[in-house]
Image 1 (cartoon, rainbow, N blue to C red):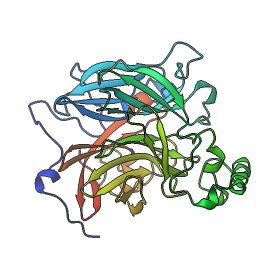
Image 2 (cartoon, rainbow, N blue to C red; image 1 turned 90 degrees about the vertical axis):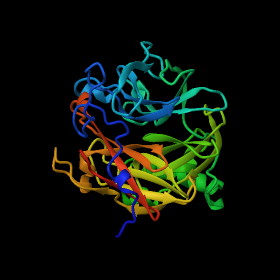
Image 3 (cartoon, one colour; image 1 turned 180 degrees about the horizontal axis):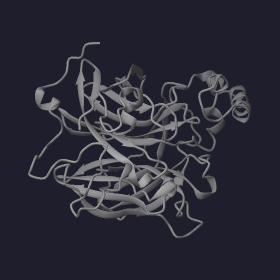
Length: 374
């Protein structure tokens, strides 16, 4: 497939301010301005007031790092390469009855700024300590007056309770469909791509209490409307859930993406007239081959395009077949011509040593490409 790509300046990468200090290197340890290891995984970057804010999961040593024992860490930068430690923006709670008690799962925190209220709003995937088998599937919501926090935990919940998707066919909103869905949920394996899951009708059984939500991201469209984009239906189908104008709740309007495509690690951006979504298959902490989708609207329909990744990670010898050993996480728009795709190389045996990978995105003729660079 031939690609008509952007200018040589974009191909050169995303260095915005190449000073004397060397850039962070992909798949290597990254350090902040104090010389300490940057500890922000599964998160993203917010640009506000001429500064960038990098936020992510603070990991601890060993397998204990698969749970949250500290909270969400934030760093700030004026040039995307020199990062100052801003501390813990949202701390886990010492109260064992709290939804964000020490030892819960707090994953993929994303922060957006609400122009209407002036607040900064954080969403994250939450599994309470009573559901460490990942059966909870909730979103946590927190808010702050400043981008670096501290953030105040508001609540956790299931998305879009009491509503059917906007693009649901009428025959899936009947009492008969609800009865079938409850029976399917009770009998099929809840995780993994199986023939039983492919045939099952999942989402109607969860309309009353809200849909499950695991890997997630946030996206603010050109008109200021924000969406939670999350893996749902036991990770088999992406949901696109519209937020209220204060970004603190759901309007009840939501759309199902491509049914039974089993996509995690969603990272979303808009370039020109196209919306793009990069994701991975569902293999837990293990890497797999990435795929990307495109659509004319954030709510779809989404067209599956293939693998956007090119090149080989020289540190582990892995190429696109395993996404360089990484998983997609976030896409930052730096300018109209510069986008950065962000990935995590997970190390579940010692999560604090998980590594970051940031790569320039190339676009052309409704297609995207992400090539490995050190």
